[in-house]
Image (cartoon, rainbow, N blue to C red; front, side, top):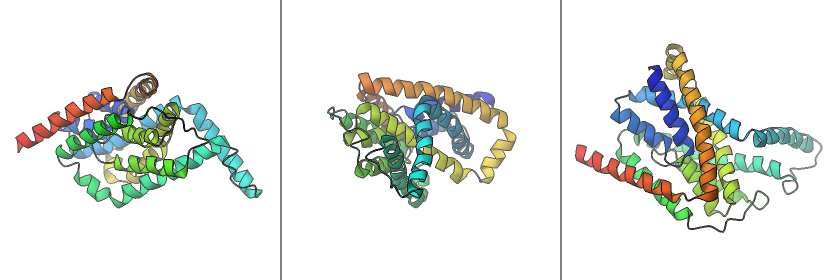
Length: 278
């Protein structure tokens, strides 16, 4: 893969991973319309997740550092028999909620992996997924009285966010959009819902890298295109930071329905294109 293609893929991956427009859907469109080899794109984008992880760490480093420190404090409390004390430790509760949300995501990904892979063979499921994404974003904007903070968040909230993140493995269904839907529809404060959606992406992204990390295709791309991989990861990290900052501003001040209109148009166009191409 050339450096130019790697950088383009990195920019698209970084932007669409965090904007609610579906990174998988846009990468599939890029692959189809620009004639990029299918297998290399899927494996290469998994490598680009390193760049998107850097984006999350850059934007939420203070929260992540607090979570890391709280982990060791939690271990010490458990050894001393003091229990979890979630009601007394908001940062600890946030870490537990991230773990709880990651469980249904992992189960869905493992159980339905073969089904999801079948959706990547044509653009029709991507078009349908984009329509679903637009609908979720439109519906959740109807709920504006969001007041639930980490102190009031329940395991039910976390599980629902995790289920929505798992469903987003389908192409065209945005991970950030679906997790935002899961958080906001459960009443989470808008700023907190954005933060939780991005923090809960860390285990999901790490899981995808670990799951595919030992594949022969992954090793082949790393050995042959290390320079392109690095360039793509840098592009993904920079564009990812811009996308996260944009999402924070949009959720605070604007409406997610602007993204609804965009993905509806693209999704409908993809469906029409696919049906006419048969």
